[in-house]
Length: 139
Image (cartoon, rainbow, N blue to C red; front, side):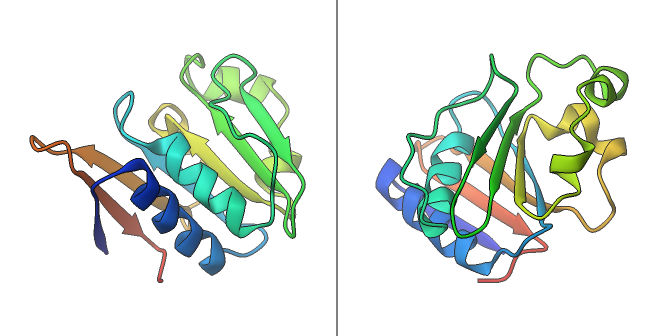
């Protein structure tokens, strides 16, 4: 499914709609260049789960946990060199737990992720409009 977003607010709204369709145990690979809107869509998903905390990119913390109607685990693999380093983090219980896991820069650990992993790809078009591509997610 392809969606278009013309603003941060619209990306946030799409995130809320996506969040309402997710369930415990879902793993979502977030893909897109720097500034594409991966964290913005995560903010919308968090809002749909009743999370009031400020959602920030976990680039330096690698994993941020948030409590809502369903726990949300927000991971950022930007600083991870690959699967071996990811495995050393010991995040299996989060990744395969009872929450929803969103993974930015998931391309670095794709071979570790389960086959039924969902994905959200965000592309910045020439006009600045974001094309959001959902795979495995129905609204």
